[in-house]
Length: 288
Image 1 (spheres, rainbow, N blue to C red):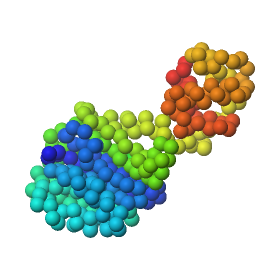
Image 2 (image 1 turned 90 degrees about the vertical axis):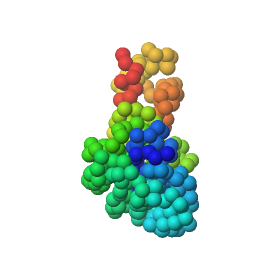
Image 3 (image 1 turned 180 degrees about the horizontal axis):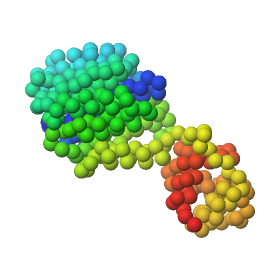
Image 4 (image 1 turned 30 degrees about the horizontal axis):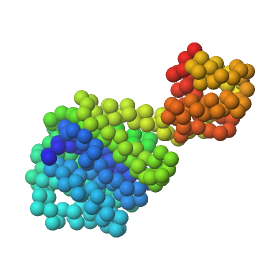
């Protein structure tokens, strides 16, 4: 396996999130390159990838080794290390990147504050430079910044063989659906003509279903809003009660069931308010 790949590994100290974004002319690259564990760090293993670098690297990070020490430990006894490429960010945000001397041209990396970018078989060095600039200049959450970096890298030339797969992995302590594990975002585009754009689209869907409610976008379930919802749910068979505009138990149960049916339960509230994103979704998808 010698995927021509570019990736970014990064840490967001304010949100306590670690993540990896990757694109390659390689099928299902998102299932191979990114590795991460909350409070421990993140890793991208690529080029003639040694996949054991992922789990072994996380184990070393968990033992307290720095990103640079992990790179050195993983590569020192690997007879094919000069064909490998590796990016690591540790639990404190220290970053390190390694590119073996036998990686196919252009190959190399950039280490910044809390992140590293690396790539091989690229059109030019400008790909990783553009990724670094985009990550540093983009505002917002870590996932959006990683996507911005991938898009910038592609715009600057990207993989010299073209596009095929992309992946985005972001971890945070108890960040998953239901808060049971740390895998907050794990999205993959395995085979697509424009995988980064498709990854961006899927991330927007992820934000819709699993994003946190913005308190400023809460809408009071007053009589006009409730009646509108009752009318629409009645038409679609989700509610059989009177259209009186009262947010009674029957209406609440019908609305709760519909929100769950549409996979928006992470945004459900038990008070007299509704998430504005949920309301907009219901009004758009259940028309008059």
